[in-house]
Length: 196
Image 1 (cartoon, rainbow, N blue to C red):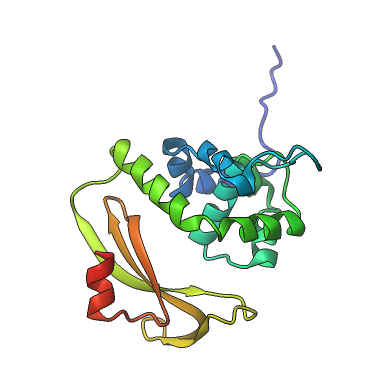
Image 2: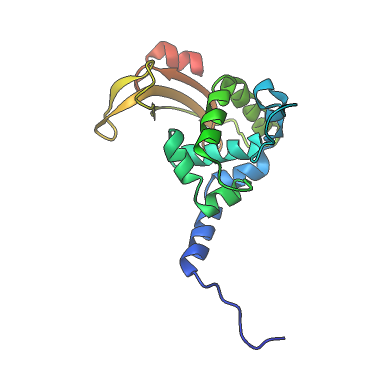
């Protein structure tokens, strides 16, 4: 046995790791199963073509992390997933390329509503939800190429953004269970009632 103690060479990276481990997404990854993504045709293994480097479930964890950190868009998400701690704790074998991120996001947008419903069902079955509900509105920024989005003003941060509004119902530890996208952050009473 050596009498020298092994110490980490980069204390900042140890601190980063401990901070990452304390975020809300990491514990969520332990409670939810994302393997069901392979049941969708867009993510089913291809009989022809290249073998996938990163699994859809791991890429989805990467996107959840990015959205939690307010990172949106293909290039910013790709940059965020280049950080070794991020791709490691999201379960990725290596950082995904920009093409992989873009392809995944394109496939995901076709089935995201169904995925959201399945994740809420899992959270309910695992006891992550309780009977206290909150309703709030937020904004979701979009890339400037998205013709469906528009410029809006968010009075809570006193700035303009290009994107959509989103009315969210959450329960428990702020776990979203229902959402409705709108043209602006402020939702009318009818939208609030519908989403609730």
